[in-house]
Image (tube, rainbow, N blue to C red; front, side, top):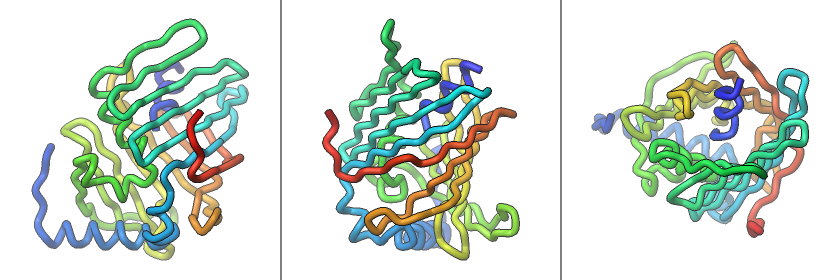
Amino acid sequence: MLKFLFSLCILFSFRYSSGQEGKAAEVINRYLDAAGGKNILKTIQTKKTVYSGEVYGRKIRFEIFQSSQGFYHQNFSLDGIERKIIFDGKHGRNETEEYFIDMNSEEDEFLKTRSSIFIETACDTLDIQTEYLGKGKRGEESCSIICFRINDKFYINSWYSDSTGLKVYEEMAVPTPGGVIIQKIEYYDYRKYKGVNIPHTVEVLTGNREIKLLLKNVIFNLTLD
């Protein structure tokens, strides 16, 4: 259970042919247009989202702050007991009221990707390789699949709807104290907030444990306290 909860708190160098690079860029650009358009997205310097849900019958709440400057802060509450993840752009740590644990270098590298408001716009600055993996289906929906490879261990495979262009599913290799785990995330119920499409329902599956999170609030360009 601890590994599962930790994985909730976190969320090969290849050379590709020009055809693969072109197709990946095409899918990514279509997503950015569907999400709100590059002109709107580039004005977002920070994003705060608040999600809530239940796991094992216990109430959970996530407050996530992301910054274009590379900062990532997350407050995670389980039945009122809080844990924080704080990443300053270089190093991260877990905090509770009683202790803190520094992240290792692999966890730091992964957290860089979570600090990006839209990973699709941060590949160059984060040195992430992209690859078009082909087509797949989520239910009856045809999707295009892009791999965002962070290094030889960690990656994010994102599925984008061919009908809407929006991201509907992700599989990611996540570092935890117990080793690498595969986390699966479904995105539903997109609605616009200030011109940007935001998923209002997120389902996270780690192993055989599933959690549904509902969006409670989102704020753009908020200064972190």
